[in-house]
Structure formats: C-alpha cells, structure tokens
Image (cartoon, rainbow, N blue to C red):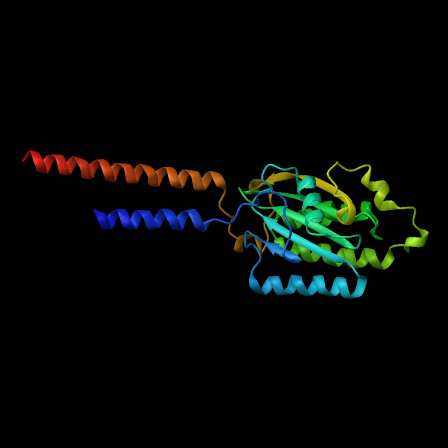
Length: 244
C-alpha cells in the first residue's frame, strides 16, 4: 500500500509541473523572444532570432515577442504596455504579446511612442497578416511575418523630420494602458478565437495545445478521489483484519 501511495504522489507532482507556466502579471522580459509555453521549437527559435537580429541591424528596430499561457485576466493591451514599460523598451521597439492557452489565442501589441513606423500600418499588419498565422497556430510564422513586414515598413517610413508625430496621434485613438517615460508607446489589444475557428496548416498539426488551468484542476480532482478511495479501502481492510 505504501508503494501505491508513493507512485500516486509522484504522479501528482509530475502532472502539476507538466503544464506550461502561467503568465501571471506583466513582467520584465529576459530577451527578445520569450516562450513560456514552448510552442516554438529550438530550430525555429534560431530562425526567429536571426530575423530579429537582421531587423535590428538593418533598420534599428527591436522586435520583441512573448508567448504565455494567459494574460492573468489583464486586458491584452494593458499587459503588453506594462510589460514593455517594465522591460525598458524604447522608441525603436515593437512588442507582440500572445496568450495561447485553453484552446484559444489572444494577442496585444505595443509600439514605441517615438517610433518612425506608422502605427496605423503596424496595426494593420497585425490584423491582416499576423492574426491569420496566430489563428492557424503557426506561431513561428506569425513572428517571421511581423519581422518581414516591419522591415518593409521601415524602408518606406518617412524620416522623423517630415512626420507630425503619427505614433502620438494614433495613441490617442487606442485603448488606455500605454506605459510612461522610457516605456511609453501605443498599445492595442485584440479578442480571442477558439480552436474551432482556427485554420489548418502544416505547422498547426505539429503543435500540441498547452494545458489549460481547467484541465489541471480536473486531473488533480480525479487524483484526489483515487487517493481518498485508496485510503478508505486501506482503513476498511485494517478494521476487517482486526475484527477477525
């Protein structure tokens, strides 16, 4: 019986640690690509990082992407804006934040307030070109698409001397929640889509959906019932043996 309890206890520990880490509140990012949910493989991570490095070297734009299981009940735009602020992102930076847990996806963005990129165009790229990749759960393609389009936008963007502050103007039309000081910028948040709404693609079938919090709770509940049943059965056997 002791052996059964040991095995069940070990199983509980494994199940509790098997799922991806929850996002929690906005926080400082450790690098340009943060993937708490491990939806991007090692080989793809290298490809994404190369695209980010090229964008920074050729256009001076720091693209940051973070994948988490959820935004901890914080609006996507607020989560992205606060994370950009805590991470010290500046005028030349762009942040894409994606929550991929529970069979749905949700994403928000942040663009530096002093960015030379037309904010409306960046948001258009996210809506028209990046969102379809996210809907198909092609996470790597989504980041690569954004990097490529930012490269193109930077080539045609007007110089700061000829602009009238498009980033600041667009900011007044977007939801509140942009950061302040060094992390100030334009944020935007987007809704969710269920797995049934996603398109199919060659990469979609390769990526397993991360565990949701509900799944974890159900598994723990089942294990609790098994442990309790085992305990009651053990006591019944003990009482039965003593009465004999």
